[in-house]
Length: 266
Image (tube, rainbow, N blue to C red; front, side, top):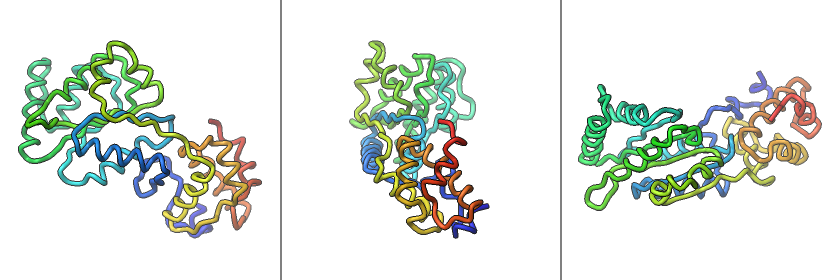
C-alpha cells in the first residue's frame, strides 16, 4: 500500500523473523558471535531477552551462518512432557517411528547422533520459549542429551532461548546439573536511541529505500514509546508509514508518531 509511495520494494517492518533484515546492534553482534563459537565447540548456550528483542531472528541468522555440516533441530513450543520432548527430537532426527518407552527412545536417538557424527554433521538443538516448560523433567532430558560424547567432543550442541523469567527458573536447586553444562550465558538488551535510528535506516535500506525517512524527532518518539524493543519499533514504524502515506508526507516526523501512538498498545 505504502511501498510504491516511499519507493520500497517490500515491507521493511514485518513481524516475522527474517535474517535479511537482521540489524546487528553491538549486543546482537556479540550474541551471534558467541553462539557461533558455542555451536562450533558443540557446547550449550543460554540466550535470554525480553519479548521482541530478536532472539528467534538471531537463531535464524545462526543457521544461515553455520551452513553445511550442521543439522538444526528446532523446538518452538517445548510445553510438553519429557517423553513428548524426546519423541519430538527423534522425529527431527528422521526417526520415523520413535519408540514409546524411554529406554528404547534414547537408544534410537543415540544411534541417530552417532550416525550424524560419522557423517561429520553436528546436530544443534534449539529450544525456543523455554520459559514455558512446565515439566521440569524436560530440562533434565536436555542435560542428558549433552552427555553424548565421543573422542572428547560432544555429539550435540544445545541452544536454550527464552524470556528473562527463564533465568529465574534455572536458579532452582534442581537445575544445578543443567546450569553447570551451560558454557555461554547472554542476555539481549533493548536498542539505544542511536541504535534505534540505525535500525530504522537499516531496514528501510534493506527494503529498497533510502536513509533518513524517519526524522530525528520521530526516532526519539519511537524509542521512548518502544523502549528500544525491535518488535515494538516495527509496529510503530509500520503504522507510521501507513499514516505518512495517507498524509502524503515526504518524511516521517514526530507528529506522525503521535498520530499512531494511541493505536499501539504494548
